[in-house]
Each structure stands twice: as C-alpha cells, then as structure tokens.
Image (cartoon, rainbow, N blue to C red; front, side):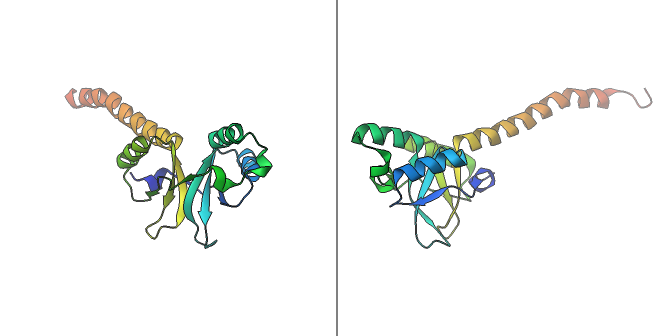
Amino acid sequence: MTIGTVCSRNPVMAPSDAPLATLARLMHDRHVGAVIVTKAPIDRPVPVGIVTDRDIVHAQIRHDSDLATLRTEDVMTRDPLVLTEETPIGQGIERLRERGVRRAPVVDASGGLVGLVSIDDLFAALAEDLSRLAHLVSRQPKREAAQRRPPGA
C-alpha cells in the first residue's frame, strides 16, 4: 500500500500572501487542521509550506497581534515534508516520525500537489489491515476443523 492510496485528495490550499485570518476561516469552514501553502501555477500547485491550527495559535501569542495583521508566510512551516504518491506507507510513517510532524503534502511524480496525508489517514488504513488480519486468524481454526472432519460427517 502506498501513501497515494490513503491520502486525502483535494486538500485545502492557500497562497503565501493570504491573511492568516483567511486561513483560520478556511480551516473552520472546511473542518481541517492544516492548509497547504502553494505557489503557481494555479492549475498545478506546488507545496511550499504548511500552516496548522496550532501554528495559528502560536503565531498569535508570539506576535501578540490580531490574525488580520499576520500573513500566511509569517507563520507557515517552510520546506515541509513532502511525500510522493508512490511512497510506501511504512516509509511514509518513518519520514513523518523523523521530521516529528503529523501531516505531509502528497505530490505526483512531476511534483504537483495531489493530496495531504495525516496520521489519521494512516491509523485508519493500518486499523483496516489489522482487522483483516484478525479476521484471518479467527477463521483459520474453523477452516482446520472443517478439513479434519471425515467426508459426510
């Protein structure tokens, strides 16, 4: 399984010059905890940063100013961890762990943004795999018992 199979498509995006208040409203309205900061071209955006809800809170406290006066570029994490669609899930988890982040933009082979992967996405995928494995383990004794029965019994 790859990152591309579990990531959320159609991530929330914004340009770096967007007011931080706009990002906060976007997060609220779209029920997300992160916005990917992109640069042109608009038809094939490329991730250059990420802003999380936590970044917004920290920025407001650190700058002691109104969100309307802060710009996205003032608080975004530059050079975010970016994963490709083909990144194996295990490798993606390891890279997230190494960087100490919970989310990463996902790009296609040409570097265009296609999604966002979060630890929530990964937990869901791994839980589904574990559930299937548990089902297999629970079925095996029944299968073995059925094979031991003499024909017609």
